[in-house]
Length: 269
Image (tube, rainbow, N blue to C red; front, side, top):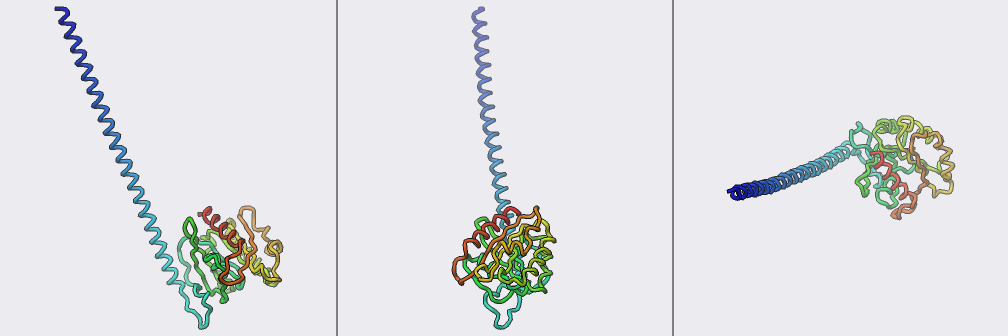
């Protein structure tokens, strides 16, 4: 009789253990199902985020394309009769446009800004004879995207427009004719007016036309432009540049300058 009770209790315990094991298995299965659902939700969330990012990137590209088109329409100037073909990108000054931050290309007229800019864009020497009468907007492709350059004519009537863009510039490229000694004081005055308007804007100076016999060495240009006075808070670089035979590869110094400009622009953005 007692053995029967013991066996019954043992059987009940075994049954209870079996129930616990089954319950544990069920809970384990449920946990796996919950974990799977969480993973699926996380994956779905990540996919949504990626789709949203792609959509935002596409919308940004579309917006930039519209703005570029708008700028081209707004700045489209009438070409003068007999104007040199290299100057077809010039713009007449109209109301400033609100757009992405740009790399400003400034300097006196005749310094070679357009030739330098077009040579950087194509990696080939491209001379421009006609001076820029207004604005010259150029996009240069890089491994990380695009750099947007804005050249403003260097003759007296157009210089006042540069102040409008300085506050929105990524960096300033200042081109000076190294062989035009008589205008170096004027170039110095213009440069220091520009950097005074934006005390932290990175500065890259092109001491251009170094191939000419009368050209000052870059150390003389550094002194003539008083570059030691630009301030300790500003990044400043000086390159000796020249563009010689049309169609030839740009000099190594210009390629170095292009790489540096791309790096500075990426750091500022």
